Image (cartoon, rainbow, N blue to C red; front, side, top):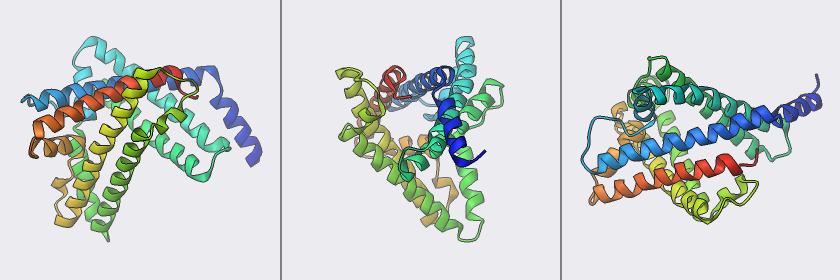
Length: 261
């Protein structure tokens, strides 16, 4: 099979109704994840402790009840399907190189999410915070490890800034095939900005871990939100970010219906 045949086969696979439907379900599951993380973060802002305000905390909360467990298994398949659809987008061509690289990166993210959901659904989930710290510690032991951690941190900050700009300028509308309505657009705008700010803090903690040579400083999203809570007016700031994450979840529900897949 030559390159042209591969691209054509990938395009046909990406346009298959079953894969398109699975991708839409994947966006809806993204909505559930962000809403649950937002609720956990909101409770944290009002003094609640215990549950991590990140992916592991949200997935762990779902695993604690029968309906949530069923939803986790749906998430495993939906995120896997969304990852496969992103692979077809990266392979089939028609975009600029940067867009294809972005699709490939998203495929990796959704594969990781699918695997993480599988581990929680099967009763073997682990803390995202400890995984991030362990990863950072391992990386720092490598040659030029501090530089690698710093570069990862700066890359995450850049992704955060991209989200803020995408939200502020409402560029996310180009991801949709039809207009989702005024309220979904407003939710998307608030959601992208809030998620971007949270990601920027996560990246900043990686940079701080590299500068201080302390892997424990890199604590993922939960660590970023706790850092935000410790800032002046932290309760209000965290509550606003939490509401923003919930808004991103609402936008994701709209994207599930209106996404250009």
